[in-house]
Every structure is written in structure tokens, then in C-alpha cells.
Amino acid sequence: MSTWSGTRNAALTARSLRAVWHPATQMKAHETVPLIPMVSGDGPWLTDADGRRYLDAISSWWVNLFGHRAPRIVAAIRDQLDQLEHVILAGFTHEPVVALSERLSAATDGALGHAFYASDGASATEIALKMSAHYWRNAGRPGKHGFLCVEGGYHGETMGALGVTDVPLFRRAYEPLVRAAVTMPTPDWRRATPGESNAECAIRAASAVERHLAAHADEIAAIIVEPLIQCAGGMAMHDPEYLRRLRAICDRFDVHLVADEIAVGFGRTGTLFAHEQAGIRPDFLCLSKGLTGGFLPLSVVLATDRIYDAFYDDDATRGFLHSHSYTGNPLACRAALAVLDIFADDNVIAVNRRKAARFDAIAAPLASDPRIAWFRRTGMIWAFDVPSAPRGFARRFSTAALEAGALLVPLGRTVYLMPPYGVDDAEFAMIVAAAQTALDAAFTD
Ligand SMILES: *Cc1c(COP(=O)(O)O)cnc(C)c1O
Image 1: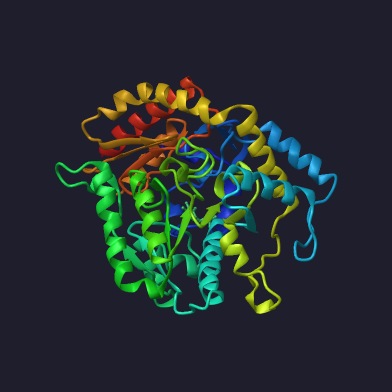
Image 2: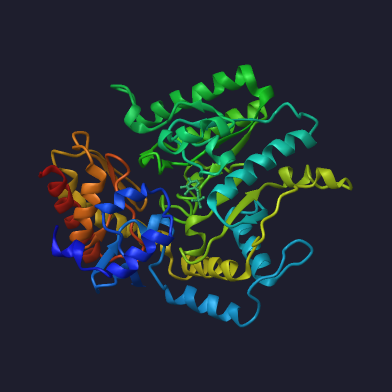
């Protein structure tokens, strides 16, 4: 065991292992894999209890956009703390939730002008699915309550969301509890057949949806997709033509298109929202993760006028009957407003485009490593596969990356780089170097 893994605050680690049930973790694995107590964050850097610094190259599971303790977000939350920390949103309202809803509507050119809030991504998925099925019920078509999802898609892990999540590891144990959606083929461009372009691969995947709906549209309320990148399923990227086709197919068969941009929203794909690259708008847009810049739990489902109007009635049972205790929390809304201010004031999308091109050059030596396949990028997400990865690759890789000073967590045999937007060229070079070191370590016994 290296000194590195033995010196951290052992007392805190031991208390955590006794009292905290950590997420998505086989707790027994921590008998050998160290748990790292973090004490502070600053920009893209995290500092542990021993004063060691790590570059957060996965943006703390994709939530952090502008670095840890980003000053403008800190200031916005502090200011709100002196006014109102929370109030019930049923029957009451407040400036931060109104302003945020207006700004999000404007960000979709008014196409998705009705904002319904929750606190996490899985709840946003649940809301979109419930709203879609309830819409069809209100529209006099109660038989339309089934859903289509995409192979390898991830939409959260509550029981409703698991029904549209196609990641066997997360789903298998709970299969009897879940009402499964119908899974459609992935448009993942790695699945292109020889001679087929990425767009043709996407069209082939969309055609399967079309065939299914031609026979079953009467039973289907919506299809839920992760636009441009299926993140948790292994950073599977696809051509925007998929979304254009789906939009047309959904219109033709009277089926809702739910865009789950919980991971890819807020600039990750190179546009504020990923679906913009297809020149379409979904019927529902789910947002969370980056929404508050990684500060506070908040999610939102944006819906069109058409959806909203189907619920607007004298009859209470035609209303959308769903609530969360912290719906529209003012502190979280202020954090989100600060995030939108930073996008506007700092011209983040355009700056990121130039940055991504420079980062491509920095990553070139890694991209040409013979052990790597499918080195790919969309916007500010880089990913590659390691087809010959040895057993235990992800754990070995991430442990070695930490020793090299970068927080990198592969998804199985797929490694991805998803740093906060503020990283500079030197910091990105450090991430790339750590990935190279970790790759070597993972292949060495
Ligand atoms: C993370 C994620 C979710 C679930 O969000 P939670 O806040 O973890 O519940 C849903 N959809 C996508 C695409 C995600 O990446």
C-alpha cells in the first residue's frame, strides 16, 4: 500500500464507513479501496484532509460547471439567505422562482414556457413521464400511458425512472418492482455498420422507433432520450439527425418527445441545450445537475403551452397532481440564476468552443495511444474506450488517476474527461497526463 492511501484522516473515514451508506457503492469494497475525506474546494481543485489536491476532472459527477465555490454563485446564495430561505410553492410564489422560470423559458425562445420544479434528476424524469401520461388522459386517450426508452439510456434510479433506464447493473435487482418501458436501439455512432455514416446510423435507429409506433402509437405516451450523448451508459454519442427524425416521428404519431438534458444541458455539448443542435424543440425538457452549478439540489421540467393547456381546467383532478417539499427552493433558484448570469456575462458557450479546440490538441497524444479506441468529443466532453481493459480496470484506473492528482472515474471500459468549464490549458494538460499515467498503471500488475 502506498503512503498516499494510508495517510488520510483515518478517523473521519472510519466514522463515515460506520454511519454513512455511500451511494452506488458496495460498502465492503472500502475494506481495500480508500474513502477520501475532502475538506475544501477551489475552482476545479478539491483538497483532502491531508492537504493533497485533486483536479476534479468529472465535475463532481457532472454537476459542477464553474468550479467549486464559484464566487458569483456563492454571493447569490448568501444574498438570498438574508431574505428568504424557503417557502411552500403551492399557493405562494417568490421572485427567484419566477425570474428563473422566465429566464429558462427565454432560453428556449418561449417554446417551453412552463416550469415545474423538483430537487433531483430522477424526480424530473418521473414528472415528465407522469405529465405526459396525464396529458393523454386529459386529452381523452387514457390508453396512451406506455413509454419508449433507448438502449443504454439512463434517466435516474427511482422506480419510475428505472423503468426507462437501460443500465442492467442499476436495474437487475429491482426488476420485479419496475414497469419496464419498451427499449429502442441506440443511435450510438460506434454502432455504425461499415460504410454507414453517423447520420445514417442515427436514421436507422430512428426508423426502429417509427416502425414501433406505426403499430403501437395508441399505447405510447412518450419517448425519453438523452440528446447527443447517453452519458451514464458510457458516453455514447450520436448524430443530431436522430433527434430531427424523432421529432418528425413523434409529431406524426402523436407521441411526446422528452429530452432528458439533466447531464448534457447547460453547455456540455457546445450549445446551451443539446437539442438545439438538431434545430428542434422537445415537448418536455428535463434539467438538473448543472442547473445550480453544482451548489444545491434542484431540477426542473419545462413543458410547452400545449401540454400546460391540457391541464388548465375547473376540475381539480385534471390538474398536475405532484409536489415536492422543496419545490422551487429560493436558494437553489438564486444559484441557478447566477449560473445563467455567468453564461451571459462571460460568453461561456463561445469561449468553450475555442477552448475545446485547444484541448483537442492537448489530448492528441492520448487519442493516438494504441490501447484506445473511439476517442471522441462532443462539446466539453471527451471520451474513449479501452477494449482490452484488464479486470477491475475502472477501479485501478481511478485509483492511479487520484495518485496522479486527478479525479477521473471510468464508466466500465470507457474513460471520459468532463472538467468544470474554468480549467485552463495547463490544468487540462495535467488531466491528460494523469489519464495517461492511470492507463499505464491499469495495464501493469
Ligand atoms: C444523473 C442523471 C439523471 C438522474 O439525476 P439524479 O439527480 O442523480 O437523480 C437522469 N438523467 C440523466 C441523463 C442523468 O445523467
